[in-house]
Length: 443
Ligand code: AMP
Ligand code: GLY
View 1 (tube, protein in one colour):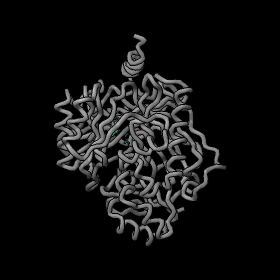
View 2 (cartoon, helix red, strand yellow):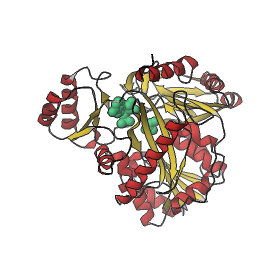
View 3 (cartoon, protein in one colour):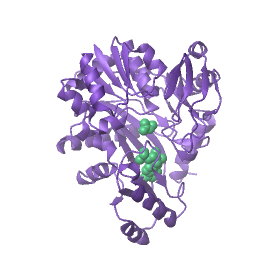
View 4 (cartoon, helix red, strand yellow):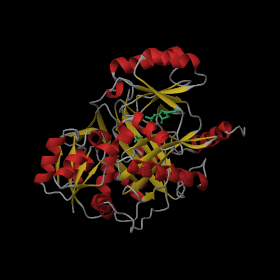
């Protein structure tokens, strides 16, 4: 089976490796030369997925059978529609369905129109005076979100990044004036308190196969301080749950996704691919922070390598629109993923620095290495301004997976790089359990 993959990050390296392990021949379109993907691919095109015409023509020339798209931007720009027009089936959503991520206004409106579980109070604004009027009467804290895509870096939360209403207004003004996220619109929604987690599902639009839960760490610095990033690392547990939640919360989260997919279908936007739900566990139960129309990055690295079933077959079935007869299972292992990023990532990143990676030592440590936005030149690896690479430890026990990931990190050296060592460590997990208890008023 010839598979086109789109994207050059660690998530796509994970996707490519899983497809190759199940016998696929990979044709990879990527904006940077990801060395991991380049080595595994039959052929590659150095082109961003948003250059739709060029990627689609290349895929057609290569006579690929199906396509799997990693990042949200090409999905939002309609790459699936263009591929399907040329009879290339896709295991990813079309432009209409991708709106669940590309427009936070659409997503919140859908939840409210269909009275979906997990929704929050929100308002959408395109005029700063209306924001001011609204805030004059609003009590409580808010999250401020540009309507469109910002790579996870556009959301600011009152009490965390914004001190008071004045700062909320200033940031709303900036979003509207500078069209942050691509549109002069901003969503204000109630601030949720609790612990965040990710549930990803495979879906054909109707049937779903839920995966183990993952907890990402969006903040740049240890102790969950600093600005939001695309994600600095993540962990998952062998039982598919997380240390601060039980099976009933998992089941409720699955139900929220099921109901949302039903609403998407009824709304004329049937969704296929991987749907990613970002949840906040609050005192009122799970609430949706956002949906993503793709695998999470880093979350894909936690769960996809543990998939025991045939990933190529699964993608084929998703692309054909029927996964009802598939049995899918995951290895019962915990995982800890830690990203290495350039210094200043998320603020003022400095790329172009050489990184030395001892791939053999990482493998001997029992970890996996996934390259992200690095460039390979003359056999050497250089950082860009995005996340550089990730290491992932897998083991039955979470503590052991964390230790494996730390050993792996010791084999990565370079100038001007940074990482979060605290992810998955017992103290960090304990803090999350206690935070949940605090939010529930138990301590
Ligand atoms: P998003 O891009 O919508 O996932 O938002 C990025 C991050 O901002 C989330 O992972 C949360 O940490 C935070 N966030 C978003 N919405 C809210 C909210 N309503 N309440 C509290 N935090 C939020
Ligand atoms: N881990 C956050 C994301 O993939 O958007």
